[in-house]
Length: 139
Image 1 (spheres, rainbow, N blue to C red):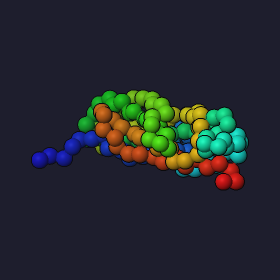
Image 2: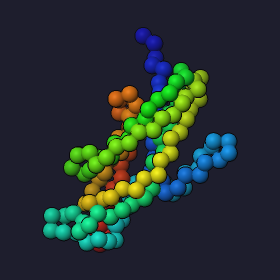
Image 3: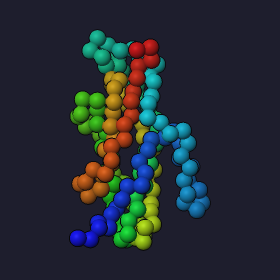
Image 4: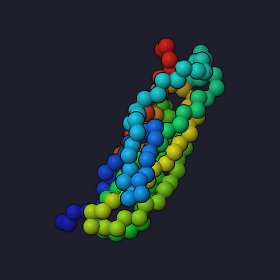
């Protein structure tokens, strides 16, 4: 049996900022996996009085032996496992092990503290899950 041709996940991270250079190299600034939310206050059921907006970037890198266009699906899951939202982006791989990156800036309204998960997939196959822990300050 032959090995699959990919695409293979090389990178899936959250960060504060992405620098894209002229040669398509990227620099990831302040990798993150946790946000501490100072305001708003928590209600009796453990949710925030109003959603807290947090901003960051997600970066996904793929490589493949074969050339082709691939749609990356990123799905954000709430701490209870329900889907908060999803989005897609396309990368074009040249084959021969060359890769491509997708960097997307996100503004996410967070309703409660807990572990949020970004599922990264291609062709209905989940390649990885990236955690984001949201903590209420002082709790």
